[in-house]
Length: 356
Ligand SMILES: *Cc1c(COP(=O)(O)O)cnc(C)c1O
Image (cartoon, rainbow, N blue to C red):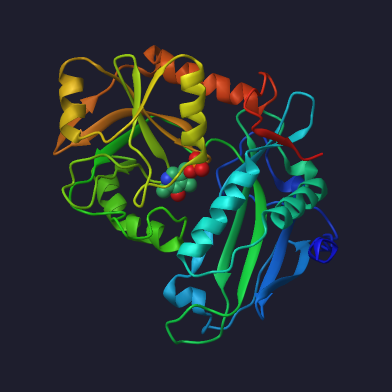
């Protein structure tokens, strides 16, 4: 079985597109490397493993995934360290989470070993696409969708799993203005908020658009029941520095279990910072702000990395946080995380995996 699942056919591009990319100025999510990995699920098993040129896929209009939302994804990054090696940050955690999302959406899981092998192959073939500068990386998008040609609402029998990559620069280029959302809901207890499933993001677009029309970049989601407790922001978990403590809401049904979040909490604890995973109400944030104790707020996620929040809008009033330059705690953690990723600090947690 092992040898059977590891057989990945490779078809290379006739000509690379890499010379069309300006590596000095990479926008997020618009450039795609030459190759992609594809696997198909049918008759209860995965097969047809191949790496082929990145490009169009053909489907009929009746493809199930397009209609009822059986789609899941992951987001991860490969870094080129100071010795020129290509390194992944906690990649098996992403593939395990893909399977957690799969279970929630009634989709088949895919072996972590297979995905790791596919990723290794893909990164070897597209090695030249991994940027060298420390504000860039190769973003990796594994995803899965239902491919039955059928219009009944039921779990599909067939699926496709694809993994493609693309060089990226920073996701956010300026500090964020976020607005506390107290009308709309991203996720509710018992819902799908903890799965990286397409519909969660589609449903968030409209409330986010309304906030953007008011001049904010992103929403700070609150709980669905009372809209009183902070959850997360866009595709990032969120953290606050209240006096000397780092505070973040606990993950669960409604908050995605971020790998960056987990890493930041571990790094902070290791640096001797008081870390608190607990519910945080807007009222608490406001009174900490009024007392001058709210020193920092930032988003954490693979795409966004550590994204400082400049201000928090709540019911038309903006809480303006201290200047970014004064935020020693998050800068220390951010620097440490970057150094680990690019091989400039000891990887004491064993997070980095060499892909060479
Ligand atoms: C992906 C994602 C995150 C961040 O997770 P990481 O594993 O750190 O990349 C946070 N919230 C949501 C809703 C997400 O989709």
